[in-house]
Image (cartoon, rainbow, N blue to C red; front, side, top):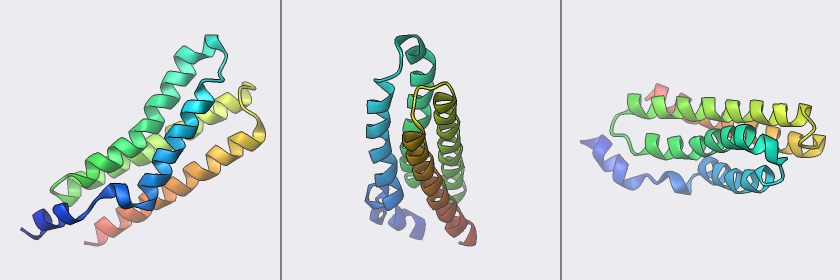
Length: 126
């Protein structure tokens, strides 16, 4: 019964990691609009799916009743953040993004991944 009570008190939207993930979604949307038209179908769609998956899975995990289920969704969010890093690296190596912008996105995704890992460690300790 404690877990149910906990569900009503927690709101992932108030966490720093969620806010950082959402802010990154907004900035990524702006970036994908600058991609050459021939790359928009592949790279834009893949980046969009992976970056929005981070915050969506943080939310879905937070809404779970059991810690084990929450951990699964956090793991998916972690993987989605890593996938987004890969798409940015591809964009950088193909010349669609400059080094400074690439490093900015990459560092922020590393920070988000660290925060998700921290959340996962807390759950495992419970």
